[in-house]
Length: 199
Image (cartoon, rainbow, N blue to C red):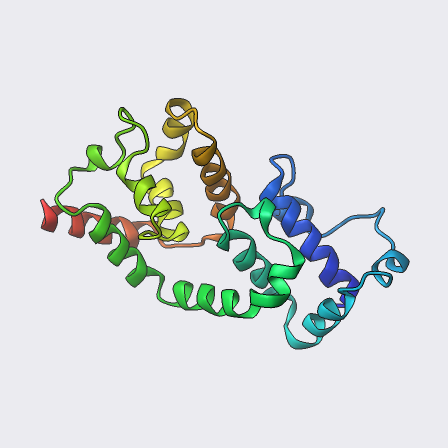
């Protein structure tokens, strides 16, 4: 990947995670109006030049995914943050995904401890336990996405929670979901074992 293409990938990923109308998997990093001459006037162009040398194309995409999902709100993730902490954030993301089933099992053991399934997703008194666990950094975004794949709770929360905090989390889940490729029956089995054992 050329430095300019690396920069376009950054812009495309930021658009994907912050705009409802943009879909990276559909449009990729195609921005026909962006000019190479404008890119070379940027002070941070050296970062993209280094990235294009250090990472294969697929890892560049993953690098930006990891960084945009790491903060509370992807819209508040800026280039300065990525330059400063990006590699560490990416390394942590890789570790989580390399042991995704283990992380998922740990998370749901915590979420479902002494709780029925319905209680975990109960919105009647505000933020449900699964959301509180995520906001308290006891549950990963990956687990939130996998649980949404299995239970489809996101649409129900969208209807019931008129809440800017949930709106931000909801967008992150929706935008991150296409990049989570799992064996669904395997994760359903893990979940079932934890819920039955904990009940």
